[in-house]
Length: 190
Image 1 (tube, rainbow, N blue to C red):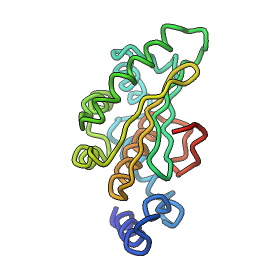
Image 2: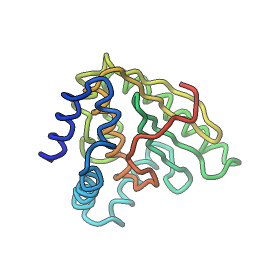
Image 3: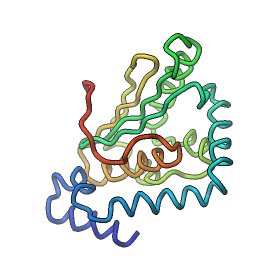
C-alpha cells in the first residue's frame, strides 16, 4: 500500500497533467498491487465460490442475473466505463433490466450515492470516499450498447481519476472479470 501511494505521489509530482493516466504504466509494482487487492477481496469473500454466490444473489435482487450478463470495468486516460451486456442478444428481459439499472444508478453516482455498490459487495468499494467527496469533478453519463448499456465516467482531476480507477479496479477483482485493470483506449464515442 505504501509503495502504491509512493508511485502515485511520485507520478503526481513529476507530471501532474498525465500522472494519473500514466500511473499504471510507470508503476513497477502495478501487478503486485492488483494481486494484493485480489487477495484482500478473496479474504473478505471467505472463499471464491461463496463470494460468487454472494455477489450473484445481490445482483439477482437488482433484477440482473450474473449468469445472464457480462460485466466489464474499463479504465481510460480520462476516467473509465462500467459496461453490462446480456449474454444472449435475444434475452430482451435481461437487456431491459441492465439498461434500467444503469439509467437508475448513473444519477445516483453523480450525486455521490454509492449505496448500490455497497449493497452488492457488502462493503465500501475502493475509491468511493473520494468519489463522494469529488463528485463535482466527475461526470457520469449513461450510454446504450448492443445487448445492454454502460456508464461512461470522465474527469479532468488527477485526484478524481485515481479514485475512479481504484473503484473500477475493485470491481474488476470483485466481479472476476476478464479486464486487466490497466488503462486502455475507449473504442466508443464519449
